[in-house]
Image (cartoon, rainbow, N blue to C red):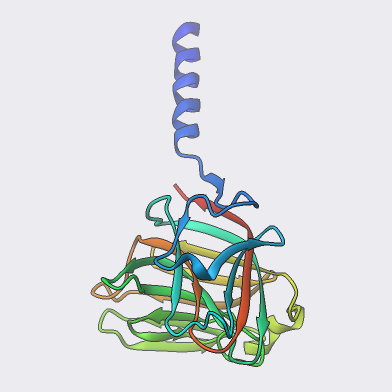
Length: 230
């Protein structure tokens, strides 16, 4: 009886471990190992961070995407730090549960990055798809027929910007579980999307960092951690 009890406990422990969430660092702090873009000329390592630069010498005329090569992600929590320098049109984003078209352009959910005076920071966009899903300060429920119902989050769009540090490092926490996506900026929820549109939503896909076309700008990412939810 004792031996059977011990075996049962061991089996339970192994089962529990097998179902545990898994966290991994996606960036080693010194190289682009595990990341790839169609045009690598925009991407480098500076200040211990993945760095994307659009300049007068190397202008960004088409959106660029640096794709993590570790496979598709489904249910997850992604945390990272980002910093953006440039004028009011400096623009970037993080693609999650996305895909690549024939030209290497990402298609799918994007958590936007911009200067705080622009409306994109903290919002959720559908790149090459349904466009804006939730503005900063919004919760959006998307019906199966595509109709979107928007409600204001507590504090509205400006609440999350109180902790934003202009041209310094800021924190993103992105959680996608089932059909629910939540974005937090420096610990404040900026947007929530509940996507019931089965014909358009994606339940898994690639992870990528974006450099948006436009004027000269620098966007940096570091401390990238992915927790896969079981």
